[in-house]
Length: 129
Image 1 (cartoon, one colour):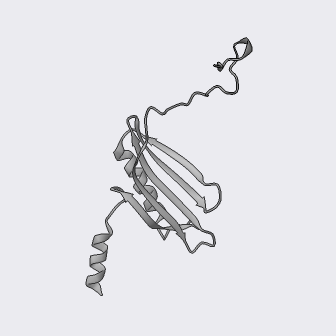
Image 2 (cartoon, rainbow, N blue to C red; image 1 turned 30 degrees about the horizontal axis):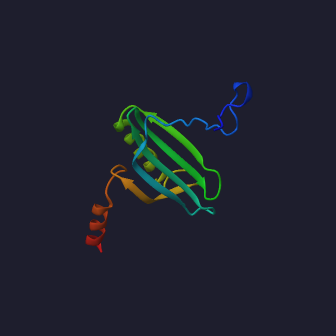
Image 3 (tube, rainbow, N blue to C red; image 1 turned 90 degrees about the horizontal axis):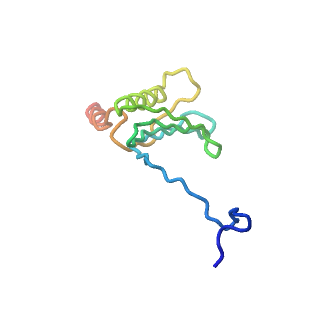
């Protein structure tokens, strides 16, 4: 049987490298997918809330499909603070009156955060028709 150590006590190339296992797994609590309207390129903005034993974070990924995305992370101690930032960013990006060139619409959502339900809006529209 051959040992992993060769001559002079050095590890050979056949030695197994150590793997770092994360102590705290981040769990996705809510996510939203936004797409730009009236934009010449396929632009997206994904945002999510993640939580683990040591706190919460809001993660965003945005850019043009097929290109390297811009990723940012904001950390929070409480879920309430993370949820507030998550909702604020969605509200700002979906505001069609904003001055920025990119204006987004909500294309999908998962989780329990993110604002009002569309159920009430649909019922009001059907009454008006």
